[in-house]
Length: 605
Image (cartoon, rainbow, N blue to C red; front, side, top):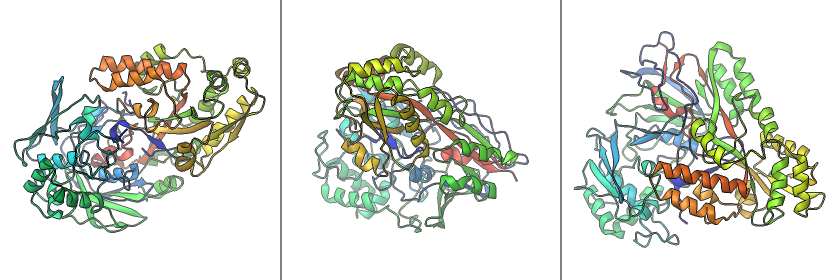
């Protein structure tokens, strides 16, 4: 099975974000800052970016936390693909859509529009804004999107195939995704066309988010020693003499050396921000500046600086004025209390995010592999409500025990409809009598060892395991905390655990769970296999019908509960805080983090 970036979730290390689905805004927008003059602050009436009216870029700098170093202009390689890198690069590129605060797919019509002109077979037409251009003045065109397709379609042997054994020519995290779904590539009248179509060989339920921001074909062409038109022809003809040179630059030419700002001739942008010359001090910060070549609404503030500050130091940095906005990874009760002590100097928002905590059983080996009764015994003794009450509600008072995997509690209507049909509530509260009955029925012996593995260090997860041990040891289990620093690299992929404790994070994808729960899913670490679940995913992912999606989601959720794939615990709480002098900082549950609308941030004059 090929790696599909947009249909795969990413395990969350520690208790916060690295890299599933959602639909109700967790937070509103800020009130206008007193004296604000450069950009109007407006209340958002939905999950997408607010209309803040006419904007004139104001001088000044706004500083935001980012917990790791910038890696490179091209975020689509395994070496650069992280939320910390895309926090920066997403400011540099425009696209047809972006994630709203609840995982809604929001259109960016200043960049272009797209629509399915046919659903059977699926054909999608894209139209770029006539003014959409790279910062060096080159128009964004079909050529850029043909290169984007090639980077996700062509093998090193010069083929377009759905054979997962083939090696991609380009080092793209999505593997051969587009070659699979759109084997002929996008079609247009000319290399400089502003309109083009994608003809899908088979339906992709997530087609709305499959195509977005490309990289500059004219730059890649020049580095390969050809014109843009010649590169287009080479892709269409699968001319490997040209494509190998193009792929070599695509793979390596945009990787950065710490502190060396990318050459603007090699790294033009289409977003509201660009790199600031000499604006990168390795390990400390990288500064972007407003892109004066951007054709739409400009950035509200001239400079946006990402400072590398760990979660444990962000609150003090905010208090000192070294940061203007923070989104600390893995917030705790102490996080909220410390922020409250700063009083009116900061604005604080808390709420649920699209990251969720869960316990997964090992079906490959161990006591839970072939025994539903053993899994039931464990499920009955896990104190889910206590975990939420003690560890999560002090951060987010609205937090609840999570009883689904593909929808979130704050997606109220969809969540309640799904849970009411898929789950009867049997594991909501600890039932030690039922747990002991199942323990005996499974033929387990007193003191049966259960290793709960997770990535260390993680105080919150250590507390979760402690609570589970206090309850489940009464049943006859011997719960062992098996935290390890290399859990994701070693224990999880090798199945060296009875229960894995971690989190998935995502956005608004429809099919992200297929990679986790289907028998052949690359992220099905516990080796779970169920024909009902497999068939439901096939049905769901091969249609654009939302009614079918909802129907099959219930089938999947019910079967995952009935067979006990694992136990969902809670949606992670999120905390953002910003200086009271900065307007339009707005919380989001999606993976983009606090900077998702940073081009709208402004400071009172």
